Image 1 (tube, one colour):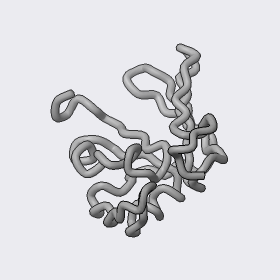
Image 2 (cartoon, helix red, strand yellow; image 1 turned 180 degrees about the horizontal axis):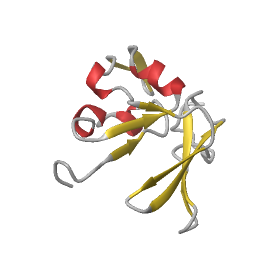
Image 3 (tube, rainbow, N blue to C red; image 1 turned 120 degrees about the horizontal axis):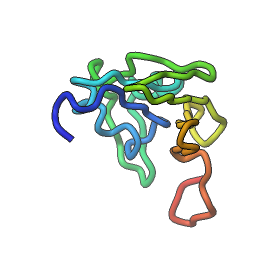
Image 4 (spheres, one colour; image 1 turned 30 degrees about the vertical axis):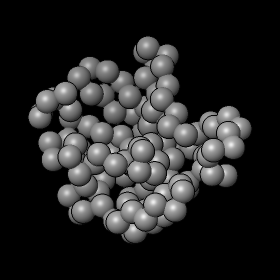
Length: 117
């Protein structure tokens, strides 16, 4: 994808593998996230195997916070954003009702000894 091709970035939860590119993508796109994600992005934290991560710069923090079930229409496509209870306290599921497609971030994780609890 090139500059200006992405209008919105939905951060499903505050882990580096789901929010790491927001400094680059947020330049031209509106960043959308749960308030718990916004709070976490502004603080340093330890990711998975003890890797210390700095806070995201202000330009990479979410522009729009989703506190309750919200539907956006982007390029004539309905996108439903649903706060979920998963493993961070700042989780969103993304549902495309017309296509019956959902992106769940890490809302469901199968048992995996390599993942943290």
